[in-house]
Length: 155
Image 1 (spheres, rainbow, N blue to C red):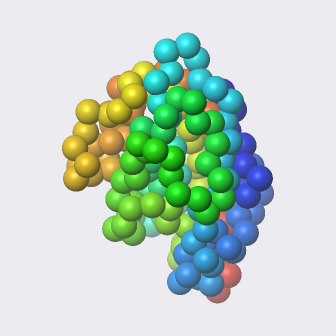
Image 2 (cartoon, rainbow, N blue to C red):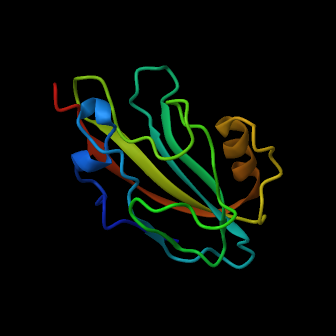
């Protein structure tokens, strides 16, 4: 598998449009595209994680599961397809939560797609994103990802 984006280029700086309004962004979700998973792929999951957040455990910006297996692309700023579910991010809402690091060095944003062996995770809609991520890890067949950078412009 391979994950790419026309919005955010691997190993480059994330444009301000994708960041949270608190740093001057518009919180537009990025375009993501991936090559199909291996045989047995029933759905996909997408995550974005900042391991540099000063929380002791990083910061989850986006957790999406149950993307149908015939979908291999999310358009920039678009609604999620069909049965896909978005989980509460660390900002406390569902959906894409763009970068908003504290002033200082650039943070690393890890984007990941996971081919999943089940069509729908056996996780209640009101569960935490941690429960969804753990369930994805149990059903993961293959994954791919890339990292991009963002620094608070006020630094």
